[in-house]
View 1 (tube, rainbow, N blue to C red):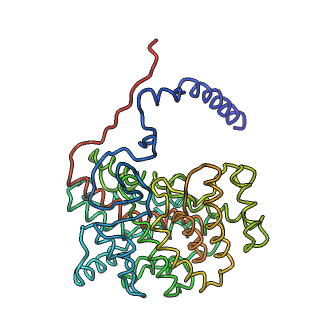
View 2 (view 1 turned 45 degrees about the vertical axis):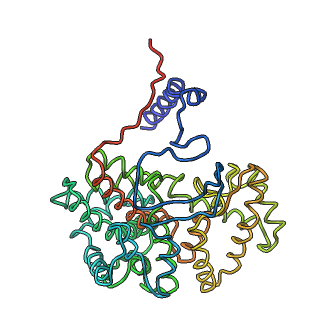
View 3 (view 1 turned 30 degrees about the vertical axis):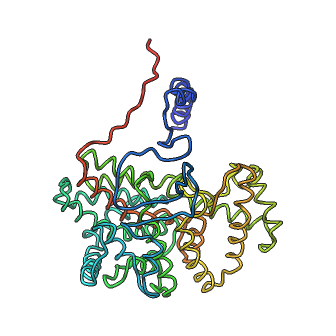
Amino acid sequence: MALQKKSMIEYIKHNEEICRKNDFIDQRLFDEYGVNRGLRDENGNGVLTGLTRISKIVSSRIEGDRKVPCDGELWYRGYRVEELIGSLKQDEMGFEKIAYLLLMGELPSEEEEKKFRQIIGKCRILPTNFTRDVIMKAPSEDIMNSMTKSILTLASYDKNAKDISVSNSLRQCIQLISEFPLMAVYGYNAYNHYEKGKSMFIHNPDPSLSTAENLLMMMRADQKYTPVEAKVLDTALILHMEHGGGNNSTFTTRVVTSSGSDTYSTMAAAMCSLKGPKHGGANIKVMEMMDDIRANVKDYSDEEEIAAYLEKIIGKQAFDKKGLIYGMGHAVYTLSDPRERVFKYYVEQLAKEKGREKDLGLYENIEKIAPGLIEKKTHRKVSPNVDFYSGFVYDMLGIPRELYTAIFAVARIVGWSAHRIEELICTDKIIRPAYMSVMEEK
């Protein structure tokens, strides 16, 4: 067996070199043929590939013939996200209300919101023995993989799984929005028990509770949480549920939907996109970086000491030696990320309740110092993005890191669903981008 494994390793290593030789494309050819790598032009702007009425991102304004960066804006169905969150009462959980807005295109009346919350509550249940037979079998540290397996398996329990009509797809999307928290938490609990040897507990969801409240209740052995904890997590979910049609996982949703595929396959594909560290896993890199900074910076209030260590990170002398300060900068926003601006208030409230002001002070000093150091090095203006603080919030809430990207998915399933419905309604064209062959004939 050992010989066979060694032989396979040698075979793969040899053929990797063959692949590298035959798959290499000179980067100059991309410029010669005008290929926008990553569907971004030379200025970093996304190549226009579709239209949407679901959301909008603003990061610059046109003044005369110049494009000028501005404070970032995020709009959901014609409303700025900070206005939507600001319109909620202090103790009001708004995830379901904003989910209705994104799905249906308009804010619900009191009666419509009540009905929608009831439907979400009733749908927050998995098929009989599903947790035992699917989620608890072959548990994985990769909760996103566990959830994706569950999503695809749910199709076997749906008699109309292949029906891609708008009405049936909307039903399936609402059910998946309801079921995602269960698949995430139960997937982690199974891994935590079978792989880490910890105690097993499976709490049934409470139909009367919001998505954020159910998440906290199901994750904790004692099922207890505070109003501040629930409000902060609810806000995080709202801020993460949608971010324009151009992000990788939402574009994946559009592409797979355009092929005529079913809802379960579409959402599984979106999950596979989101789990990539360049997309949904960014806050984990922030947390790993912060662990490293805490281990090497003695005084969290000493800006000179912090700046000196950040310069080592930028200079590829510390942390992962890639020269990046994670959580700083964004592909779209320049001056500010509106999600980070909104979230900061709730981060401060939670840090105060948890007695984590010292840690918050370190984050705030990095937020103040890092942009200047990065601009000095790259001549590019950056600001903190929402991922800079989201990992800190999840840490204060006691959410294990294995669940960070899964919590992102619990929110983003709403945006994916809205884009799937819009794609079904607006076009019957399959998305088929062009690739120019530069193959050498032999």
